[in-house]
Structure formats: structure tokens, C-alpha cells
Length: 282
Ligand code: NAP
View 1 (cartoon, rainbow, N blue to C red):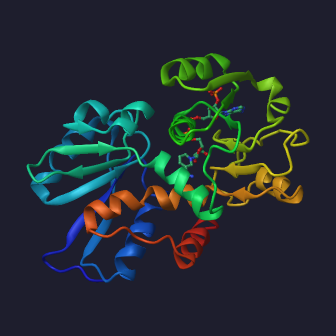
View 2 (spheres, protein in one colour; view 1 turned 135 degrees about the horizontal axis):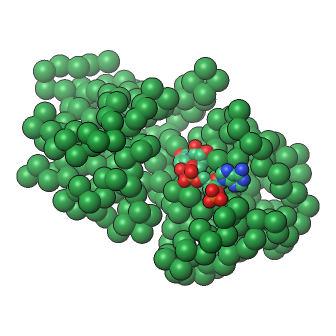
């Protein structure tokens, strides 16, 4: 690792922040490419977000990622916000501009698509209907990603139906809403199933869904990444479905920020995956 007086700096704001894997990801790339720089975790309380953002330029920090609880709160505090972040309603990447202005973007949709494309080369998103479980922040990014890449139909299935309906009405496009109690049946003729709920996380409630109606060639993706192989992915593998885990999205969503702050679009390598996967077991 090189950190000279000329080092480029970036980091992540969150509260709490100790759980974040972003420092591991970015510092792995900095070391791999021999870049003079550092990426630091900043524990920023919700009430301090505006003040913390306002000093980035003064400290010469190139930008930051944002995680819970700052992703939505940052929107009105920035000078520019890109279209994807506006549609998703959250910012996860901030780049300080040459004039000190703050540019916000959301790279979760990009990360989700790149993770699928990396795991399943040739996948376009236009193969057939997609089923998305969930209507929270992560689901918004997944739905925006799928509609942007031309999915012919996206079925949103959420415990709180009204939340899914509000999301579909706001985003527009080929979106349908299905009852949570009907989730097994929504899988008929689907080409992709994405779990974007928090169900299946280690120590939390499990995701109860039967895959019998899902066509054999359908892809199953779980964006939950602790554990890496969720019960949903294990069940899908046992049925022979191609699967994509949540680490793919997590790693690829980090790329645009790294490129902007440190000047290189980084590779998502097996070594990086192994390093972050090992951290998930700790
Ligand atoms: P969120 O905004 O809190 O949304 C949670 C979602 O889970 C909602 O749709 C909620 O339904 C649903 N849910 C929660 N408990 C449920 C239950 N008992 N039964 C049925 N549905 C339930 O959370 P989020 O930010 O979207 O994150 C969701 C998951 O995605 C988390 O596990 C997070 O770690 C993961 N994630 C992964 C990545 C990645 O890069 N791989 C990125 C972002 C997030 P209601 O609307 O009914 O409450």
C-alpha cells in the first residue's frame, strides 16, 4: 500500500459503518494497482451528514460512498444528481467536482446488471418476465435496472402490496404487482427471479417460497450476501437453475466510484471475491 503526501482519498459515510465491506473492496483495488491512495470508513451520524459533505472539498477528498442511513437524505444536499439516482430515490456515490460541487449517482442498478452479465455472459434482461421480491430501496434499484435494459415484464411481489403499487406507479414501465400470498404462482413463465427483500439474511427471518412453477432455465438471483449461499440459492441450485449471488452486485456497484476517484475501472477478480467472501464469515 502506498499513501504519500499526494495520495488520493475517498471513503464511505454510514451510521453505523463498522460492518461495511467497501473499505476492503476499494483498498484491495488500490493495492492491486499500486495506486497512491486510501479509502476510509467514516462514522457519520444522521444529523451530521450535511456538515460532513460540506468539508469533502475542503479536505481534498475525491468523494464518498453513502450507506444506511444517508442514501436518501443526501439527495437535497447535492449540487447535481444523475437520472438513475433520482429514479431510485437514493444516492450511493458522490464525486467532488473540480469546482468543489458534489455530484451524486446511484450505482446499485449498474452493479446488479454487471453482476448478472459477469456470471451469465450473454444475458440481456430481455429474455422474458422477471419476478422481483421486495419493494424497498434495493428492489427499486433492481427494478430500474431491469426496466432500463428492456425487460418485457417485471412482476413486483411485496409483503406490503401498497408499497409495491406506489413504486410501480412512480417508476412506470411494464410493471405489475402481485400479492405476497401468491408468490409461488407468480413464477410461472418467468425467466428471472430476484430476491430483493431482507429475507434469508443470517440470523433473520427465512424466505418461504416454492420454486416448482419456475421454468427450468430461469435464473435465480439473491442480492442478500450474508450468507453468500442463501437457502433460496441452495434450493435453486438443487433444481438446476443458474444462480447469481449478492456479492456480484456488491462488488460491481463499487466500480464507478473507484474509477472516478482513482482513475481506473477496476476488475472484479476471483481474488477480490475470495477476500470479501472470507470477510462475510467473520
Ligand atoms: P428495505 O428498504 O428495508 O426493504 C426490505 C424489504 O424486505 C421490503 O420489501 C420488505 O417488505 C421486505 N421484508 C422485510 N421483512 C419481511 C418479511 N418478514 N416478510 C416479507 N417481506 C419482508 O431494505 P433494502 O435496503 O431494500 O435491502 C434489502 C436487502 O438487500 C438487504 O438484505 C440488503 O443487505 C440487500 N442489499 C444487497 C445489496 C448488494 O449489493 N448485494 C445492495 C443493497 C441491499 P415490506 O415493504 O412489506 O416491509
